[in-house]
Image (cartoon, rainbow, N blue to C red):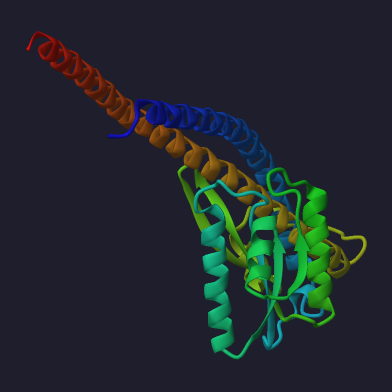
Length: 294
């Protein structure tokens, strides 16, 4: 039977591990609350940006000439994967990578070349390990992204699209539903879907009216479209950050629960081993006494 000291050593090790996972759970929970607050603050800005785009587009005589709205035959597509800089977050990174590989297979079956863009150390390391060539990568801000980070990425992808290096940009990220549920979203961010602008017919009538635009609506819309890309990327980064913290909090909670169950199991084994040792010592004493009186 396993020695009591060995079992006791394992119990101490598991207890130390549980302290770490419990602390990580609390930290992830605090960061999750901040991430949720940032998303809630971001949504009114994003909605207002969409209303401005719709109102300006409806006042424009033509939006076909704008580079970010031009659609062309897709020969090269860029996949932008938003992953985390750290692990220990359950399936957060794995489900993103699983989805981007599925998109790659689909695009290649259609004869489309794929270029890789990735945010986060985990995604970048996995793609490099698989011998993929990364066109661009960004690291260091997955848990707390700023608007400047979104601008950094947006400038890169709009440059690739405007120069004709890619004909489509697809961003894949985890959308935050709850701390227990993160839904993988595949969004075509470039070219900007014209349906977004045409959807203005069902929007608030306050954006419709006899307005005088200075400069021309087409020029205003040309300035708004890059900001729209930045806003959508910032929203995706915030959703991904909240999803990462939610996934990490859930994973650490499950780890702490498993550690507690393992401690209970090891404690029971230790008690049985200790009882067996005591019984063996009593038997040895009785046998010794019988030998002396024999």
